[in-house]
Length: 134
Image (cartoon, rainbow, N blue to C red; front, side, top):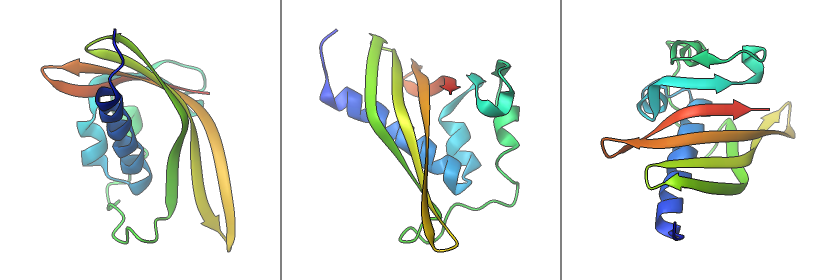
């Protein structure tokens, strides 16, 4: 498989959009990027494999609105040291450390978490199919 910076950038951009949707409370954008059969292992699943979007939907309050003030976001999410491993032309494993920055009581706070996400192209559209956060 040959290297393709534009192909890599497409996945990185999609993943960043997904992360931004999550911290911005934008369920429509988030769910549009995910497979309906999304599976995950996350801290919130207590080491259990969870399948489907209902688990994730819980974390998006029905009254949540995307952030209106893009110049002063409540959270900033960054993928540190992203690594892509292409499994073919229609599947890729993306691993990185997720950094989340926020202000709390006038103090800058940064948290980190290793993540692996598997993206698969189905009918020409990339969808997130699996997440593992440690």
